Length: 286
Image (cartoon, rainbow, N blue to C red):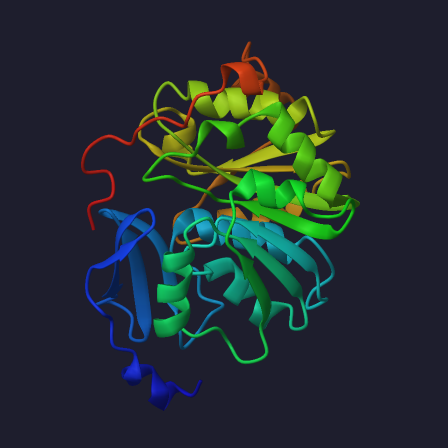
């Protein structure tokens, strides 16, 4: 779509979707950009003029993981668990043209809303399946993906069955030997959930690191941490450089530092899993 066509996007106002009420709000600070909000929680930011722009800080960190998952510009096979406004699918479509992308998004009416009003970049190879993320992951062939992005929320919380060793093992099964999992982990002080997620991923994958803003890592505020896992060594130095150069710099926690961060946290299994913590009131105020 050409820049002159962006103005033709007309948001429909509050719209009933399977997961509640969704709304597309124009970004007053960035022309051609839209924020998808579901039941008051910002879910995605999309720049139709520049799909390579990632506004949300944690999404930008996920973008760094995708940038380093393969040689620059090389197409990848990607699986996105949780679709929202398809922000990272758009990003890969323009930064790695020719990538084959599969999206698993439970809310079919939300996907219909996004596709009707926020068109994908021309040539994007993106297929969306309406299914539960874990069921959709289980249906994929072994060793069929280079990257798996897990960013699933029911309201403002990650469902319990997407936080476990069994879930991580499904991701490892779908990934190729050098493939990478990037997972959004939302938590606040004292970071018990985030520490347990590190322990969970380490029970499945050989290599794990965490990307997060220092204040969140120190337990000062609720925020989004990005957990990265792979059977192959992770590009920790590259991630560190990129995260340090962001408008809101982040740290990369790996090795001994990650040992200290995880502490005595134990892996989570299906039998005892709980959703991620409820965000405190006002955390998503714009």
